[in-house]
Length: 252
Image (cartoon, rainbow, N blue to C red):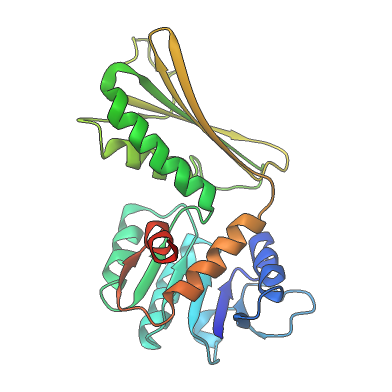
């Protein structure tokens, strides 16, 4: 049994994780952290990590970048693995996560969906085949409550494509200047509206042909299931940085 702490337990993703965990017999929720208490919670609740006392195996984080320092301090002090799913971190915070992985196991991903991680691999393969003969544009759509833009997933896709291209430049907005598109550009576009869970589209536009790879998340359940799988995977692992590719290799 893997006992988890949920940060952001009162949010929409927290609720999805609680519901998903209730359907499994290998995971239970030991505690939750949020500014407000979840409704009808049957686990320990605290407003912050300094207030928390509980016995748990793994932290699962769907919260806010401002909580990172307390999260990492608690994880390191208790030698506890952390599944970090929050997006919107700056470079300094990403470096802190990397530094923490030298002391504890850290599973860090901007998207916990199996389908999205397959799209990333397909986009990487397409970019390697097409080279700079095809222009690359990434379009992501999310609900109107999402704070960060572009999405962490869009950046994951762009980063994967950049690994196989000689040179890449991310372009987020073209209205401020007038010039032809450069071959090294990767356009990244964000749409926010309604209750869109998550839509990602990668467009490879060549001369007289277009390849489009897309993924649609219909509910937050896919992300909750992925986070719980990551928590079960991370329990007992050695310190280091892990991601979905490591989980997929273990389940092959």
